[in-house]
Image 1 (tube, one colour):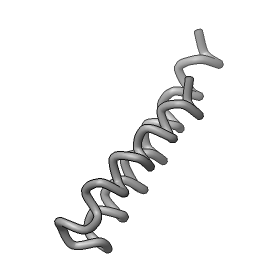
Image 2 (cartoon, rainbow, N blue to C red):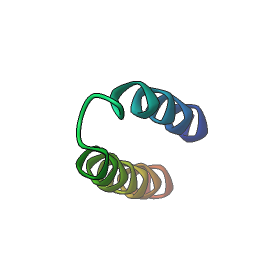
Image 3 (cartoon, rainbow, N blue to C red):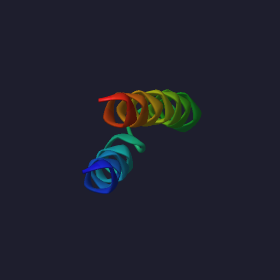
Length: 47
């Protein structure tokens, strides 16, 4: 699930990247992805 979700983010990023500031979007996606991944791992292993 996480890998397919990551692929979706990459695809979305490549569509959005030419429109907005690359660095800003990249960092926002990176932090969101890291945060969601950590949260998902914590939830999965504690449940």
